[in-house]
Image 1 (cartoon, rainbow, N blue to C red):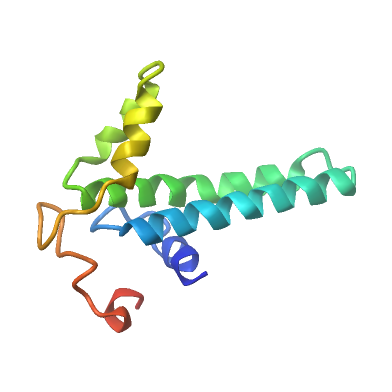
Image 2 (image 1 turned 180 degrees about the horizontal axis):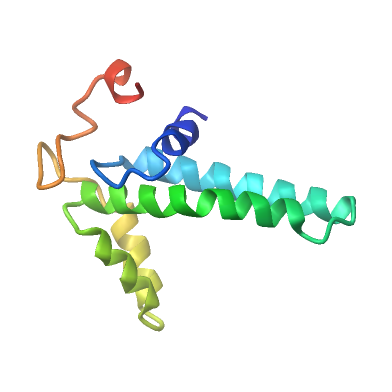
Length: 122
């Protein structure tokens, strides 16, 4: 959960790097909460209002953690646009997100793996 809240705290921050764990834990918890709000909305006949509100509140943090994840692999945030390439774009994007980050400092900052947990999640 701390990875999820860490991404929410950095709401619109595209600077720095995000480890694989931070990115994928955010994706997992975000997907679970999206389904939860969707099904609660269905149960109370709310016509997707809860789901729409939650999704609109998390779209920017989702984009920013993706940019920081790309920075961890020493790529520009513009690499997100590869997802718009038909057929192979999603495969390339997924493989880049699963790739290990560069060791040591890169063009986008210090290695988040090298930082102790007490500093990393402040």
